Length: 84
Image 1 (cartoon, one colour):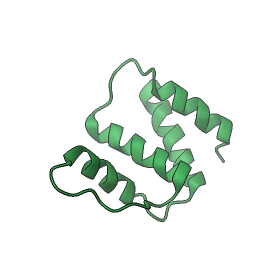
Image 2 (cartoon, helix red, strand yellow):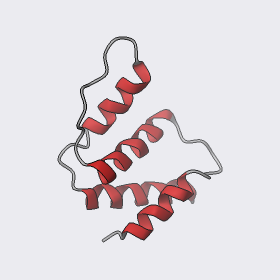
Image 3 (tube, one colour):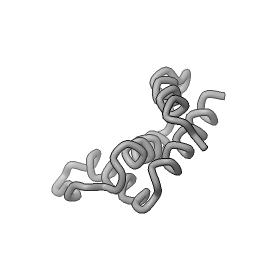
Image 4 (tube, one colour):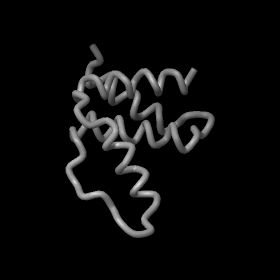
């Protein structure tokens, strides 16, 4: 079980990674963070040519149904992998 303190520590560590993760990994971090902190996506999918926000929304939508605890644990594990 991942504690809130472990999650918050991972969030801070994610901001100071020595190497910038790929866009796919950044989207995964974003989606897991949103799922952990807000739950299932709760907005309309962006439209038009807003490709960045469409990608972020789609990544978050893929996490739908995942509990906050599960998303926190996956987020912490991903940051630990990236930081090692």
